[in-house]
Image (cartoon, rainbow, N blue to C red; front, side, top):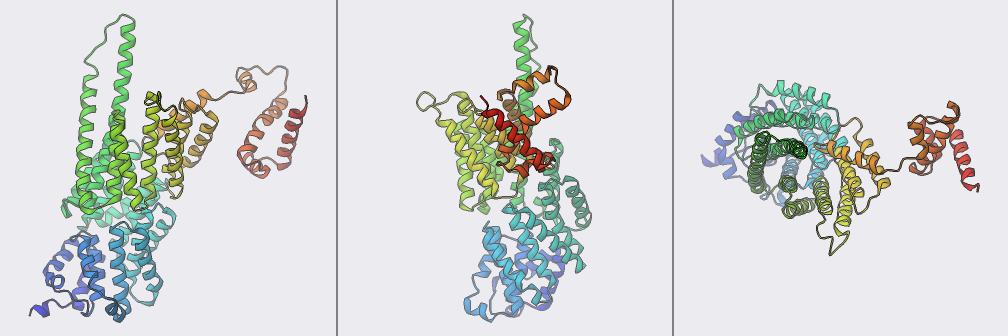
Length: 548
C-alpha cells in the first residue's frame, strides 16, 4: 500500500497543474501534504518523475517549503536516468533546475535552463510550460537590470496564459510587467496593470502575489514622496506574505523597503530640526529668546524613526540570512550604511557598504555593487567636507570618492536602471564639486548626463535633493560669460536683435560642438539648424581667435 501511495499518478499531476494555473494555493499545498509519501519515497525512475519535479518547483516558488527540497529531488537524477527521460519530463526537470538556480541568484545559469526549455517548447503541446519559462526568464532578467527583454518575456508569458484561458496565471505575469513599466518610468501604466492584476488575484488565495502587488504600490508611493502611503502598502504586503510564511524572504524585502522610507521621513524631519535651530540662532543673535519646546516633537520622532528602521533592517537581515540571499542582505547593508552616514558614524557606514559590495560581487550583481560604490563615494565626500585625515594624506579621501563614483557609474551602465545611473552621475558631479577638486566643468557634464537620463522617468528616492544640490554648486561655481552677464542686465549697447542672435550663436555653438565630439551633424540635429550654418559660425569664431 505504501508503495502504491508513493506513485506519481496522472490524476495527481493534473490536479497539481489545475490548482497552479487557477491559483488555488491552499488546495494545491494541501494536495502536496496529502501526498507527502511521494516526497519521502521519491524515485527518479518512476513514471512522471520529471514532470513532478517541475510542478514541485513551481509550488515551492509559491511558498511550499524551501528550494532545498527541490534541490534534494534533483540530486537523485543521474545522467543515465536523465538520458532515458521522455522529452516533456526532461523539460520540466530543466525548469526545476532553473528555479533552484534562480533562488540561489545564479541568474545566468537559470536563464540557460529556461532558454533550453523555450528552444524545445514548441515541440510539445504544453503551453503552460512555455508561459512559465518566459515568466521565470523575465524575473531573472529583471534581477540583472535588463528591463527591456524582461518586459518582453513577461508580456509573452501573459499572452500565452491568456491563450490557454488561465487568467489568474496571466495576472501573475502582469505584476512583473507592471514593475518593469514602473522601472522604465511609466507609473500610470504600472498602476493600471496592478489594479487589473489585483482584481483577478483578489479572488484567489495567492497571498505571495497579492503581497507583491501591495509591495509595488509601496515602491510607487515611495518614488512619489507619499511616504505614509508607502509604509501602509508595505505593511499590507507583509501581512499577506506572513499568511503564507511568517519567514518568507519577501517579508524581509518589505521590511527593508519600509526601513528606507522611514529613513527618508527622518531626513525630512532633520531638515526641519536644522531650520528651527537656524531660526533660534538668528533670534538669539538679535537678543530675542527662542522657544525651546518647538523642536522637541521633531527630535523625538526623528530618533523613533531611526530606531524603527534599524530594528526592521535587523529583522530583514535575519530572514535573508536563512535564505542565504545575497541581494537582499546587500540591500539591507546599503540601508545600514545610509543610516550610519546620516548620523555621522562614517566607520560603521563604510563597513556596511563594504559588506554590501562583497555580497554583490559574489553574485555579479551590478545593481547592488553600483549602489554600494555610490554609498562609499558619499562617505568619502563626507570625510572630505569634515577634513578627516587631511593632515597626513591630503586629497586621499577626495581621490577615493572619485574612484568610487567612477566605478559606480561604470557598474550602473551594465544595467538598464536609468535612475540608478542618473544618481551615480549626480554623485560623480558632487565629487567634482568638493573642495579638493573644485572642477565645475566636469561637474556640469555629470549634471547634464543626470538630467538626460532622468527625462520622463523621474528620480530615484532622495536623488532629487542631490540633483538640486549639484545644480546649485554648478551654477555657483561656474564662470558666467561677461557678455551673457551684461545681457542679463539689459546691457546690449547699440546692437540689433539679429546681431545679438549671431553673437549668441558664436558663444553657444562652439561649446555644443565640443560636447558633441566635434560633430557638426550632431550640433545641427540638436539645435535644429542647418549644418552649413554651424560650419559658418565655427569658421567665423576660428578666424576671430586667430586674429591678433
